[in-house]
Amino acid sequence: MADDTDMSPLECVLSFCSAWTGPDLDRVIAHLAPDITYHNIPMEPLSGLAAVERYLRGVGPLTDSAWEVRHAAANGDHVLTERIDRMTIGGARVELPLMGVFRVRDNLICEWRDYFDLASYRAQMAALGTPKGH
Image 1 (tube, rainbow, N blue to C red):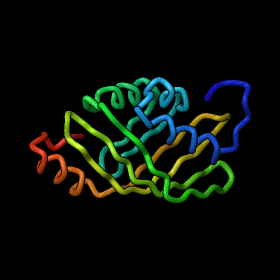
Image 2: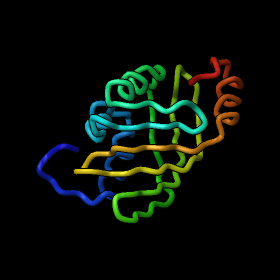
Image 3: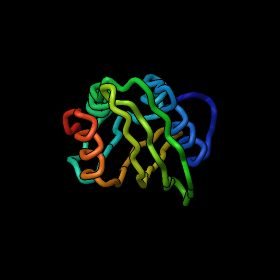
Image 4: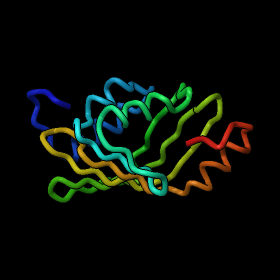
């Protein structure tokens, strides 16, 4: 987050993951660099804060969310997270195991990639009678 607090890359990413509880999208977005690249593998990547913010605010309605960080490791400015993202999207409860890769620069996340099984996500949404999602 762009403030005077100097966090380690790991602390920055864990703070970002914590912001998803609720979620607090303003706090989530405050962790992202203006030139952020966000890639939800296997979908197309997004570049720039405006595009990423538009996507994140457009998911949903996202009425409840919590990210459980199972494991995290840092090497320099890179942070790896093994997570289970739990969320309610459009009234449907979704649980998504995934691996996240982040790069942090100046206390802001400038690269964010999440690797997950898109078929599993879509199957959960379909089973709940919700469109296949993003």
